[in-house]
Amino acid sequence: MITFDAITAGDELPPLTRVITREDVRAYAEAGGDRNPLHLDDDVARKAGFDGVIAHGMFTMGHLSACLTRWLGDVSPIRAMRVPFRAPVSPGDTIVAGGRVRTVEARTRSAIVELWVRVERDGSTQHPIKRGEAELRFPDEN
Image (tube, rainbow, N blue to C red; front, top):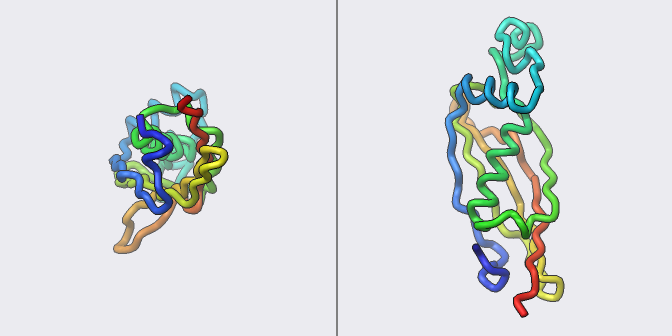
């Protein structure tokens, strides 16, 4: 587990990459009970303006959470996460989650981490999640 004393403003989280599959989206829909046809039926998704089914926003956030917890080595320092969903993610997309420590506060043993998820599409970078943040607080080591 990373310690508070090892964190410095500007530290980058190691990126976490995942290729989204239809099976991922279907499994998430079944596990979470969100069977919205946008996530399961290409025809419905196309009628709504998408190229086909899209992943749940919370699935993408879950990948981002995995990136953060892998870096931390433990979930206990996470006090809150806020993420704006800005673009859909589709099967076949390769998403990359990452972040950077924005601030470190020694008095409260806390830190704010900027978070994002990016995807390369049509020769450009898009951000399904951009300007997210996590509030971390570490216990005293006494």
